[in-house]
Image 1 (cartoon, rainbow, N blue to C red):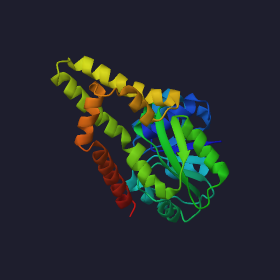
Image 2 (image 1 turned 90 degrees about the vertical axis):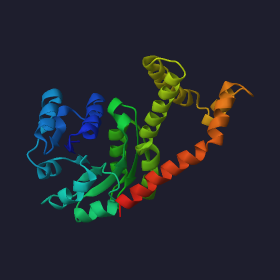
Image 3 (image 1 turned 135 degrees about the vertical axis):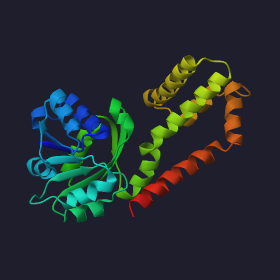
Image 4 (image 1 turned 180 degrees about the vertical axis):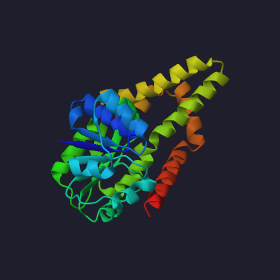
Length: 264
């Protein structure tokens, strides 16, 4: 497979780094393009990939292309493509519907839409993808292999990519906000900044890893650590009285609603 990457910013570079590090594609089979030439120059220098001179060149010379450009400019860019057909285009642009992407390329290419998240930068991403109207099971296998290079991946119907955006796409920011609050509370209770940061980060990381390694549900693990009338019980009762579940639900609904709006 010859792989193209259009858009070499943080997410595009993270995906490419994972793909190369896992030997899914060799560097001499990768063609990249970005209007920001410094981003291309860095990848060419550090990873020995090849630089293209245009978006058209990437699409025409590659079997599969990762579209890692901003949502606002994606459709205009695709509409400018000329003279190519029947390539696999994988878009990570939030909110841009498959039907609009297919229309922009006049149904000349097969489309897959992906919602990744920023932990892909460290190989711990959580991604979901949806197939376009002409994408094949072989295309799905290609997308899965590329995305698994930077973490977990699952396939969903496109209508579920808005909830996915609310859960895993925006989800890291919720966790970062919780960690910020834990640090503030820890320092207010007497811990120094570094100790509070280290304990909070390792606690969150360890809790997630415990679910992954044991296979136990979050409910079971929460119950296991909550002694009647103990410290954890007191904390959880406080969260409950302050409508913790409702707060999370409303935050995710706001993200989901905004994702729907962006696609209209």
